[in-house]
Image 1 (cartoon, helix red, strand yellow):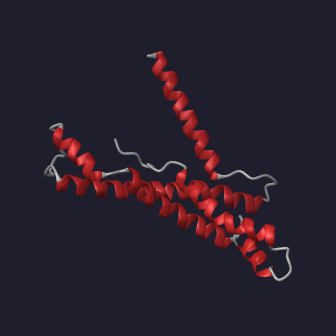
Image 2: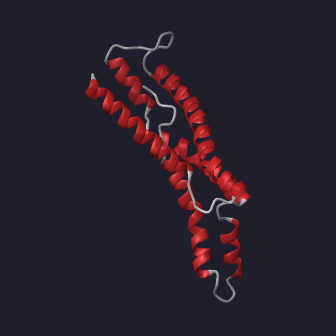
Image 3: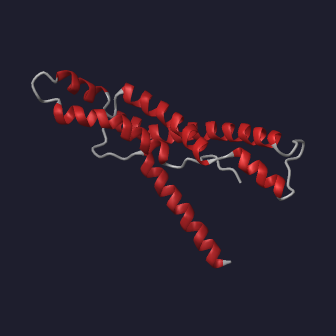
Length: 160
C-alpha cells in the first residue's frame, strides 16, 4: 500500500531546523558591534515573516520528495511483485511496473507535500493574524493526529 504522505513529519522538522538555524545565530551574535547584518537576517528569517513562509513551504515540498526518494524504491517493489507472481493490470512486470509505480508515487508525493505544506502554514498564518501569545505548529498537529490514529487502530485490533 502506498501512502499519501510517506515522509510523515520529517520534512517540516528539517525545513524549520534549517531555516531557524541562521535566525538563531543572528539572535545570539547579532548584538555584537558590526553584526547588524546578522540581526537583519535573524529578523527576516523569523517566524511570521513572508520570506520565512516561502522558504518553509518550498523546503517542505523539497524534503517530501527527497525523503520519499530515499526510503521508497519502485524497482524493488516491482521486483517483489514479479517474484510473487502479482502484476499491475495493463502494465508489464519489471521495468514498466517500476516506472508506473514511480509515476504514481510522484503524484501521491506531490499531493501529500501540498497537504503537509498547508497543514504546517495554517498555524503560522493564524499566529500572525491573531497575535497568538504562544507557538503552536503544524508539526505538533500532525504528531497528535498520527498518535491518535495509531491509538485508534490499536484499540480496534484488541476489540476484534
